[in-house]
Amino acid sequence: MIQKQQSMIFSPFMAIYDLVIPKDNLLRKINELIDFSFLYDELKDKYCLDNGRNAIDPIRMFKYLLLKSIYDLSDVDVVERSKYDMSFKYFLQMAPEESVIESSSLTKFRKLRLKDIDLLDMLINKTVEIAIEKGIIKSKAIIVDATHTKARYNQKSPKEILMDHSKKLRKVVYTLDETMKNKFPAKNATNVLEDEIDYCQKLIDVIEKEGSISEYPKVKEQVNRLKEVVADDIEPLPISEDQDAKVGHKSADSSFFGYKTHIAMSEERLITAATITTGEKNDGKQLQTLVEKSVAAGMEIETVIGDTAYSEKGNIEYSQENDIKLVAKLNPSVTQGNRKKEDEFEFNKDAGMYVCKAGHMAIRKARQGKKGVGKNQKNTYYFDIERCKRCSFKEGCYKEGAKSKSYSVSIKSNEHVEQEKFQESEYFKEKSKERYKIEAKNSELKHRHGYDVASSSGLIGMELQGAMAIFTVNLKRILKLMG
Picture 1: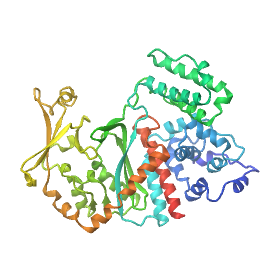
Picture 2 (picture 1 turned 90 degrees about the vertical axis):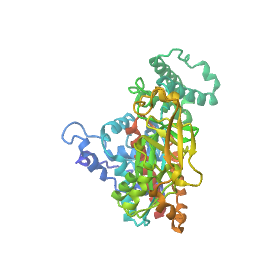
Picture 3 (picture 1 turned 30 degrees about the vertical axis):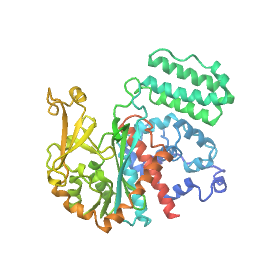
Picture 4 (picture 1 turned 90 degrees about the horizontal axis):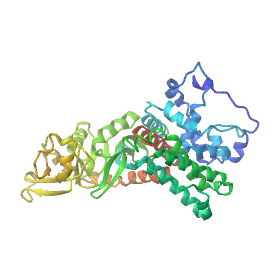
């Protein structure tokens, strides 16, 4: 077993932790709450047990990543802090005098040990299991929603990415000492990526030689972030900024480039399931997956609470088939009616418009039919014809020579009649008031745990970030409810 590879450390200083780490310290409480040995079983196939030198304990490596998520730190900064922060050493199960790992080991651990492991579901299921054992989850309802995360590289060229990071570093230095301008190397004037990398390295070298400046925490932080971009992403930089990220829409006239995390949460504010997609994906299409994942984690579900994005016909039918109450207000535009190929156009509830499979949003809509007669009315959505002419998906969608491209949907369908009646019930109105809780959870993920921007490129990296962030907020929530 992996743990047998580890050598036990006996230190005469271990008792110091009892003196300096308070009983109410967050990291002490997490250590007492969860037995991390479950990771050995999950990672055993990623290690060679009978050849080569001993590996660093995977629990310690995992805890380093957890600390990164809890405190929103870079690889270099989390390792640096573990040198002197006794609560970090205690959490990592280190002897006080023990030396720390190399920060580059974290990159290898992410790429080699966590590859092909369904870490997101595994960690969520573990926290739900703990919450059920502690009697924390008592509700039989989940709240569903999606939150967006901007891509780390945000549709910029590799050179622009490096320029942005070096600019932030210079700006921080200038607030401390403007005379440093005279010591910095001349800015790169070419469009060659290698020249920009070389400039960034020279900039780092100059700052690190200036002891008085380089020791400031805010300077250190920016230096480490620039180092991480150059070192960790030196290979993908020349190819692409982020191949997986896609454009999504937050409203009719605002968009983002990145990913979506679709979340299910109990009424006790414990995340019970999550799935991560590219930014253009429709929220409502993930409902069935979130329900099934929550059930697999141990939840008993009688009610699902969501916004209008989840009230589409397919979700109503699924809820009825599984005896689930769907507390999601109807939006007439969500109804697909008998329209064929409905998956090719998806409704974006934030913008109130349909989006085609190429990710282009309708530019306007118009209502047709007799007023007041629901079954005869339709909403017609018009797309930018110039985009349609150049679209790579135009075959079978756009007719050559057409002067307009539109998509029409029925405002009402028979499938919504029962849902419309349920919408007027007291139960529906009361449960609808619970939806605000998931907005607060999304805000916590973004503003306290760095989930507003992806920490690396690619969907796999985003899933790892999501797994650690959600694991963190769930552990914190369990501790709060227990307290």
